[in-house]
Image (tube, helix red, strand yellow):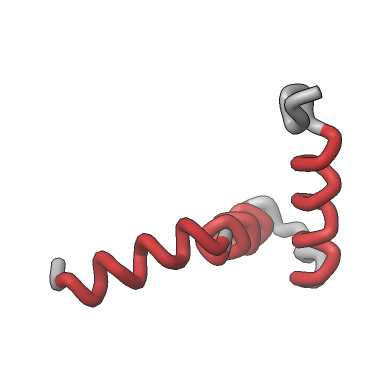
Length: 57
């Protein structure tokens, strides 16, 4: 694995791009039509905002 491929992997993990790819692959295995990327990101944001421990106060 080259340094460039490691950097690419790290950036994809950091930005959430890998989560989208995992979701699409999971939908493919389950024969489910995936939601749009926009809807996927909206649901992830909603989950992060309303998760227990998401806020300090």
